[in-house]
Amino acid sequence: MPVVREFTLPDLGEGLTGAEVVRWLVEVGEVIAVDQPVVEVETAKAVVEVPCPYGGVVTARYGAEGEEVPVGAPLVTVAVSPGADGPAVEPVERPLVGYGVAERQPGARRARLGAKAPAPVVVPAPVAVVEVPVVEAPVVLPVISPLVRRLAREHGLDLAGVTGSGPDGLIMRRDVEQALAPAAAPVDENLVPLRGLRRAVAEKLTRSHREIPAATCWVDADATALMELRAQLNRSAGPKVSVLALLARISTAALARFPELNSSVSADGSAIVRHSAVHLGFAAQSDRGLVVPVVRDAQLLGTEQLGSELARLTESARSGRLTPAELTGGTFTLNNYGVFGVDGSTPILNHPEAAMLGVGRITPKPWVFEGQLAVRQVTQLSFTFDHRVCDGGTAGGFLRFVADCVEQPGVLLRQL
Image 1: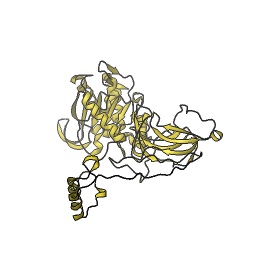
Image 2 (image 1 turned 180 degrees about the vertical axis):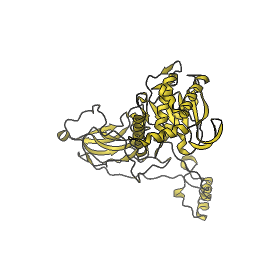
Image 3 (image 1 turned 45 degrees about the vertical axis):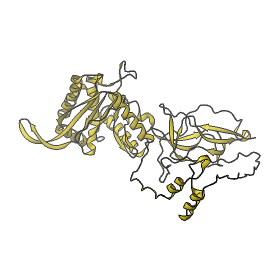
Image 4 (image 1 turned 135 degrees about the vertical axis):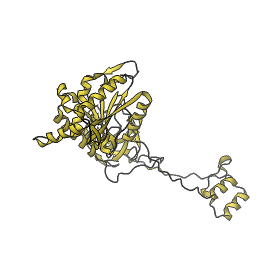
């Protein structure tokens, strides 16, 4: 005899408590194999396909597209045949097959905000079926007063569609008057639910703003020499060097001089955690919003290596292929908001990191150079830091060192 087994949403890692159903990959009544993906879900980190450890006939699905399912809640039930797939046993822990990021399919439906999820569709397992006739119970209505009936009749109102507010559901005059009242004009609002990545970002930024006493300092810098260096490097053989790669190399050199800024405060606030490795996060725009991929051990990479890794992660962000591991564990963030055509910003720290370097657009501006007014390539650098890990002197020293490297890239040679 087949045995119906229930498969629940597994823990997808990183302390996630649930996931949103994006797209069902199987139908009720479909025969599936062991470890076949049955549903595509969106977590706070990525979109993943979830495989089922049972093989058999899908008898029910739980969760509508757009609905969030908590970890441990049922996803599907499967009628497992011992003769076909071996003895029916509880699933053993195994890594998710096909774990990774999937593209959201065009036209994928979303549940309306506030709409109730439909009940799971269930088909019987291939066992004996007994049909039970459904008998409708008679509906007993309290006696409605003649006055209420006449009021409804005069206005052509069917009382069968009116919900009574009186004892035992008795329809009162006020119920008829309310039913006859013109419907209120719709409010011109569009509610967009916070789900998946957007909700995770909102929660993280709120926590950062609430818990971290952040301060920001900034300085203008003449980036003409940096841009000339980049042009010189790109005229030679080898991979092209981006401005972001140069700024990343400057950041790792600055953190080597000011290691206390590559840190975070412990969860209970009793200690400062100094990180030996620089896991460099950088802001990247994607279809799912702003994400922060992380370059691991950035302090060990040269400018070309940094450029290659930055380019790879940026492309993965744009195509939606970043894995949860590539979006977590950062110790310091580089935010190049200049790509949006703005000069300055006071960003919220990427909790639990203690510092973030921001770079505005590099644009021609009047500048006093060697005692003469000239047009130079100028940028504004900002530095936001957790005031618990350092004072203004340390933050100012870090930012001044970065500005010096931007204005005189040869300063970097001292750090190599």
